[in-house]
Length: 129
Image 1 (cartoon, rainbow, N blue to C red):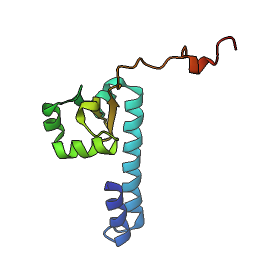
Image 2: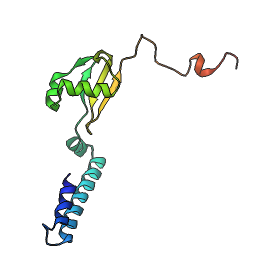
Image 3: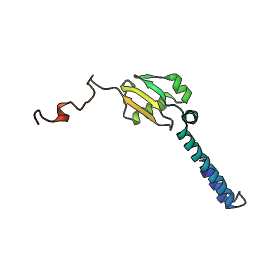
Image 4: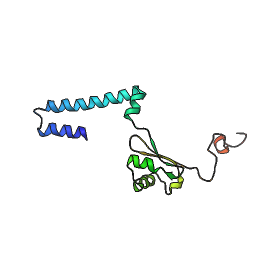
C-alpha cells in the first residue's frame, strides 16, 4: 500500500518530477530488501522483525489470551477454521497464527489409528513379492 501511495503521488504531479517519485520508490524497495536480507542472515534481527507463530487453539481449547493479543474474535477464528475444513474445534490439535497472517491447522487423528509407516502391507505389497 505504501508503494502504491508513493507511486500515485509521483504520477499525479505532487512531486516536482518523476525522478522524485522514483527515488522514493527505490528507497522503499531498498529498505525492504535490506531488512529481508538482514533478517535472513541474523537470527536476532529475524526474531525482532518477524513475530513468532502464536497458538490460538491447543487440543480443542481456545487460547483466549493469545486471541486478545492478536485482536482476533471467536467468529473470525471459527471462519478461518471452516476455511481449513474444520467443522468442530474439538478436531483441532493445534492452530497457529503464522507471521504472515495465515492460520496453520493440525487436526487430531481420528479413531486412535496409528500413524502411517512404510511397513504397512499396502506400502510393501503382497508377502513374498
